[in-house]
Amino acid sequence: MKALPARLLVARLDNAGDVLLSGPAVRAAAAAGPITYLAGPAGAEAARLLPGVSEVVTFDAPWVGYQPPAVDGSAVGDLVDRIRAVAADAALVLTSFHQSPLPLALLLRLAGIGRIAAICEDYPGSLLDERVPDDPTRHEVEQGLAVAAALGLALPTGDDGRLAVTLPGRDPGLDRSAGSPYVVVHPGASVPARALPFGLAAAAVAALAERGWDVTVTGSRGEADLVARVAGPAGKAPAAGRGRAGRVHAVAGAVDLAGLAELLRGASALVSGNTGPVHLAAAVGTPVVEVFAPVVAPGRWLPWKVPSVVLGDLGVDCAGCRARRCPLPVQRCVAGVGAADVVAAVERLAGDPLAVDPLTGDPPKTATVRAIPQVVRP
Image (cartoon, rainbow, N blue to C red; front, side, top):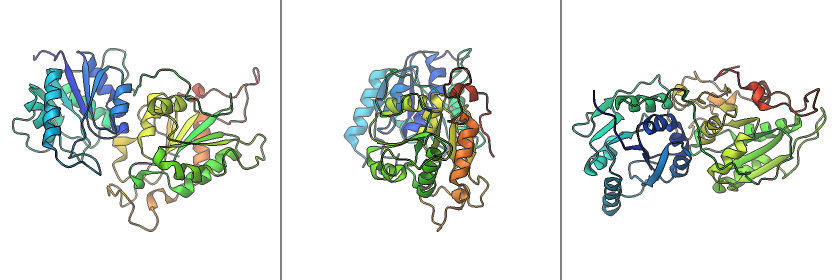
């Protein structure tokens, strides 16, 4: 039996959500030794939050992303030098199903890494030592753990394989009604076809506020206009016929990833399309209502080990199209989802915001819904 490596490198070069999904594989590797994480610019902040990561090296790979940089020999040479200085014994190269691990494996080999494992369908020549077959039935978390297992690495005893992040425990400093239960709605996504449809997002925010929920609409600085339009008039909500009307807050680019995680940790639920905050919510144990457009296989990307309701037609005949923008006049896979469906899903997971504990008068605690199964489809 081969000895376990003493120092390891874990690589995932795409977005923050992808990096968060590699967390269980990182913890499996960290049980053997210190972890250097090689991330792309979009994922480096998430890598720094993963338990078990000792240092993060950033590289903007010309074979990853929708706007990749030109090939730069000096940048490639610099990466090889930086990885050589890490002196890792082995590397886990983690990729999505449509990516090849071989360009990075070549650079890691040039940097002197002796054992490299990855999921690979192509002939790897001498670039990989452990070639793990792709399994389309596995979740991305399970894919990463399979790569770790190829190097003899496993989660420590007592680690249930959930997503996790290490947070500073600071208040994100956002204007919210103290003590009121709130829902986070995240309308954007790096791939437009996977985002919440605008009309649904705006209607769901209004409907949640009508039911008494405070709502925080989040997004990046570049999504400020989208966030503002989904939130509607700042700080206002429709008059509630049931009692207290919820307040709506628009937050675009106001917090870093750790701040967003803190915001999600205090929320009763997240409402989102298929994008990174879903996995950040899972990492802090917050229930998720996900409107899932099956442009990619749902089984790989659904919320991992967290109470969730998944809305949308996962069996639509064009599922798996991989479209970045739906070419149809109406995106049929999510067109049937309405605001009432979103509200019902939130309250199925988190209860009624206007209900109170008969003894204390406090709103219900979100912890009371943690026993709901991982994926619930109405």
